[in-house]
Amino acid sequence: MVMVKSILFVGFGGFIGTVARFLISRYFQENFTSVFPWGTFTVNLVGSLLLGIIYGLSEKGDFLSPEIRLFLAVGICGGFTTFSTFSNDAFMLLRNQEWVRFALYSSLSFFLGLMAIYAGRLTTKIF
Image (cartoon, rainbow, N blue to C red; front, side, top):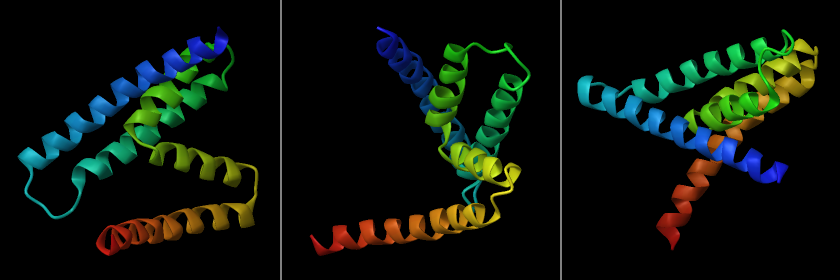
């Protein structure tokens, strides 16, 4: 029963985060003419800020229950942007002075992510 409750918290939060990402990106597309992806850029920064606030509050004690933290961090922020999770993971490696792991995680995530996008696009051209 606990797992079902957790799934509902994450799912509902994910719905809210995904809709918010769509609306913000759409707003920028309709109101700003630019080749720079301002909508995605804004979502990534706002999501990272929100996730930092959520985890910062969580570290202060019992300010956020585990269910609310799950709803906000994994659900809303996860649906809003996965970049915020990447940023938090990288920050935790830095905070723990895991310099090599930080460098590997950050650089490999970025470069292999680009390569995966390229591979995916290439695959659609082949088939």
